[in-house]
Amino acid sequence: MSDLPFGFGPQDPDDRGRKPGDQGDANPFDFNQLGAMLSQLGAMFSNANSSSGPVNYDLAKQIALQQLAGKPGTALGFGPDQGTAVADAVHLAEMWLDPVTALPAGVRTTQSWSAREWVERTLPTWQRLCDPVARRVSGAWVDAMPAEAKEAAGPLLSMLGQMGGMAFGSQLGGALAQLGSEVLTSTEVGLPLGPEGTAALLPANIEKFTEGLERPASEVLVFLAAREAAHQRLFSHVPWLRQRLLDLVEEFAQGIAVDTSALEQLAGQVDPSNPASIEEAMKSGMLEPQTTPEQKAALTRLETLLALVEGWVDVVVNEAVGERLPGAEALRETLRRRRASGGPAEQTFATLVGLELRPRRHRSAAALWKLLGDQHGIEQRESVWEHPDLVPSAEDLDDPMEFAERFGTTRKALEDPMAELERTLRDKSDDGAPDAGPSDEDGPSGGDAK
Image (tube, rainbow, N blue to C red; front, side):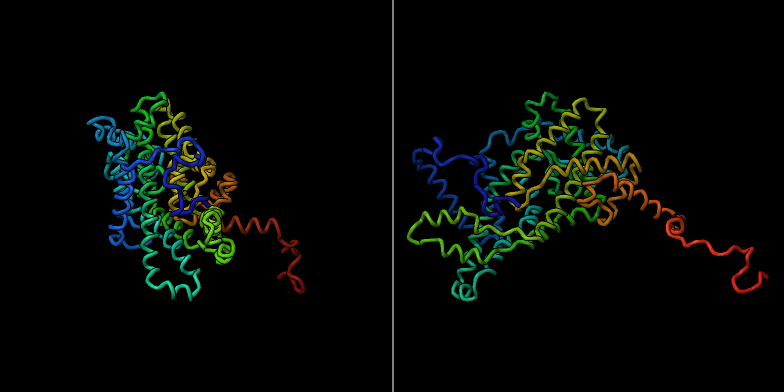
């Protein structure tokens, strides 16, 4: 679980770790800043009724686009031909991927996005991801209120709901602006955020990412295009995968619960006449939703499935470009470290949805897919995606060799069930058969051998 549940994270990720006494906090009063803040506050209230639901997405989009408009470089890229460069990179990557995977190409259209376009095109999917968590967090507090309190609150509950939607929307907008200025492709977080069949890269962000790598920009672009194209093959030709990932986020949200005893304890600790006691209680974490066994189970399933997606992409892309791009291995490790260090994608996802993805399972999943391909071939490896019941579990990631052996046995049984039945009966006979009875020469017991 994230220490910053959805709707309660810091507004500016750059301020994490800054102490109240730092020199940077002693800014003089700025009337222009006050005016901008009041204008934004007015816009928030004017939009309060324009979006229903647990999150005000109209406000989120407005804030994200406003923040991105003020960031330098968000409109830059590879120049006027960046769209052509992206399309060519994806086309080349698809040709390299064809021999190393049995899944056909899943890209129907290739696009070059700016950060602002990324926000607009991915917002519908973020809505599906955030709604269950935000709705459950808001509803849990209402459910925890005594009946008398609900009756007394009356219309105030609706107002509180609108304020909560605005608060969630404000945080979502800031987080999307931060992520939109750094994400490299539409699938970097491991989820299908963009429209189905659309391969999208963000040249401006890739250009910033390339700085300091000592690799040509074109090489980095092709490598990232291969990862995007591999993701699209998986999401396009494994029909249950996209919905299953979203369902697991919703399962996680359903497990959110509020400790009602914490409300009673909080009421006993807070002194209304002492603001310091209120602030101390808010920082204590007593008001944060409690982690439940249902959440832990859903989180494990989600982490495992995301690790399997990323591990498969890692293996397939490495086999496709490993010998063609001189810096492929270095780029592969750079992206692994970017994920393992809790890069912008992981941090934002944790803040928005309340989930922290553990990239350590990524390497285990990659080892499992590599082993399956080496032992059973490409087509058999891809057949694991045919049904969700066939994909490896968290326990399988702990022992890829055992899963590979079990997978081979299962596949043999499916290909020749009669031979497998005979083998099973023969093994049982060898292991636990009773002592042999009299031979035919002796004749049946109690009679003649006639």
